[in-house]
Length: 331
Ligand code: KG4
Ligand code: ZN
Image (cartoon, rainbow, N blue to C red):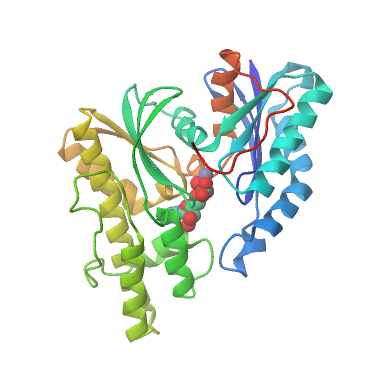
């Protein structure tokens, strides 16, 4: 069975074709980063317009690169939510029209579940159950995953998402958008112990996160003296990154311990962070826990993960009709 996947929940227009395995036959991502960079973040209205311009091209490119005839596609899977309503509507409506015109069944995919399916695209996947940390620009949450569609929420952020904190701190430092990759690059030459930023929510026993305290501490530090020298900016970036990474890794491993689960995983855009990957590998090994991370290219938004999640749903016959609508929030 081959599934065409379409993703448009935020600022990436993506399409992919995935076969059994799941095996990725093609994956195309049209990024809107250049459009939103000038604003220091995603502008929803601009995002929907860019999706409209790109979606048809991206889908046809994915089909062509897969080298399949259209008749070989068994289902169309598209992200239904959560995400930006205007962005979601473009991809999901396109998928509906495409499925209707070709007489194909339509599958609506949850974007957060799709991120978890990125773990199964390449390399050895984790066995069930495992605890997963989803850390992206819009979400930061911990789940106990017991089956392809059994995800129990253990905790989530009470304020900013981890990726959002990276983006906001980068904006304050005048480093541009998206913040994660640029902060990671600068942090490599900085001293992570220079500024002892708080590690919020580590004192509590629960699994909720909070990143606004770290962000505020950076704001206070900059208010006293906006760093001009590259070295000082690098120290701020490294100290900020270290605080966020420590909280993420520690909470994930505590959740594994509390649920007696010997396997953990991290997915979502922030999972591409090298320091997070390095620190998780070391800490997990020290505690006898197996850690799984998708290769960086499957961490950020893509449609291969959507198609892989769609493949499961299609096999289970969980299709949706033309009346199905998008949703902006989970639950
Ligand atoms: O999963 P994603 O592509 O989109 C959402 O569903 O939100 O995640 C994007 C987020 C952005 O906030 C971006 O700054 C962050 O992931 N990110 C990173 C890195 N690469 C992307 N954060 C830290 N380090 C990185 N290397
Ligand atoms: Zn995402």
